[in-house]
Image 1 (cartoon, chains in turn purple, orange):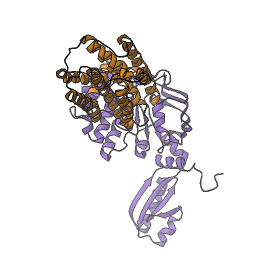
Image 2 (cartoon, chains in turn cyan, purple; image 1 turned 135 degrees about the vertical axis):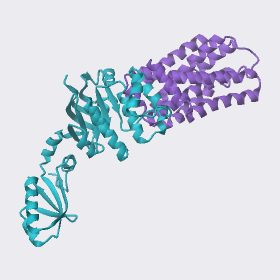
Image 3 (cartoon, helix red, strand yellow; image 1 turned 30 degrees about the vertical axis):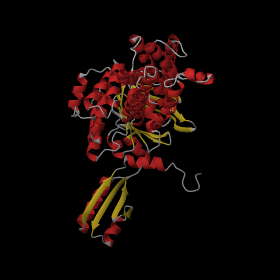
Image 4 (cartoon, chains in turn orange, purple; image 1 turned 180 degrees about the vertical axis):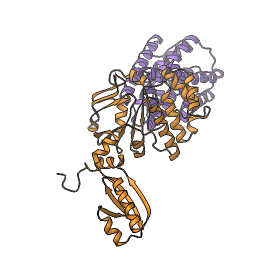
Length: 307
Length: 236
């Protein structure tokens, strides 16, 4: 089977509350896939269903070709999970934690040494005494001990400082480059912008959009934004700039342009003609964040007239 | 390989947790010593005190373990690994039993200077200690998994353990109570442990034949293990 994960109409209900409302998606082998969504969108519940941690109310899911409902042990053997909290044993040292995990999965104990070297982990330090960043690294190492085919990461950089978060992102990218299928959930835009090849955006238990970053950005259809600070801002200059639509935003001139190259040619032509200074120039391509905001905010009913 | 690994991890992680120490070691041993020092000759009290030590040792340990596993979400490490629910429950019950057995043996050592008679059948005593420890451990595990908020597990356990100390005839023989109280005693799992230990140590029993006690303890162990396994399966 080419797909690492197949979800068909997955539903999770807790009493009357429906946390996941019939979602379907596929993740290819070797792909990095992200579920992006605000808190409470149903991302974690989806991961918990796919990793056998919580039962599926209805629908079907296959992980590495194994039915999640009926072949739980096979699914567990073939996956690694890094949950949103680094839940290893506080009183055990890093080495003891990894050895214990290796025994649970029947992984060779040499893998422990190998991963401790690769992740530069302090073997003899108690897990409870480590910093949050190191804890996350140990959690990732523990999830990789049995060389799983797919790695699930639930909010992998949640609560980490900038340096640790960057290190974790690098690590995930490296693992994916080596051919591992990566399935992550996040509400971190930087993560969504840099790690996955495909993204599904979730809102209120449903997938509202799915595709590559480019496909998602095309959905929004926003043009390139150019932000400028020019000096002196004479009335003659403003008059000439009027051929493009612009607005003032926080002291900057902001343009939305279809062809940024053509606009920059125009701007520099104008500069040599009128002799102004460019104090600030920045072009912003449409981002995953734009798509996210558009899809998770726009669909909400506004004011008193939802129809 | 997985069960011994879980047992080793449990002992390393939860042995020194406050719940294991205070309710699992300090309370039963101080309780035993207090009775021994107060009454001097405690031959007839010894089986009951021993049963209390095993009850508190086992249930406190498994409860501490489940409280922390649920609170810190380490349970999920076991549940996402290729380990069956039964293996997890069995490993936890086994660790609690080992801890309770250790507390029971220390309690027995404490009692020795205060007893006149020797132990009638040491092998039978050991058998009853092991079976009782497994039964109580499974009970503690089930209760700790059933309570909604894991922080309250120890309180709920005390609601069961403290009355059992009296309804089991551990301190005062059931023969001294009215018939309805004996009936309550027969519904108490600890009664069968006390009766079995009494027979093994002193070669007599009050209300339940030792063979019957052994059988009931084994059936209850299987029942609590089954309930704990089902509960764990439905918990997440």
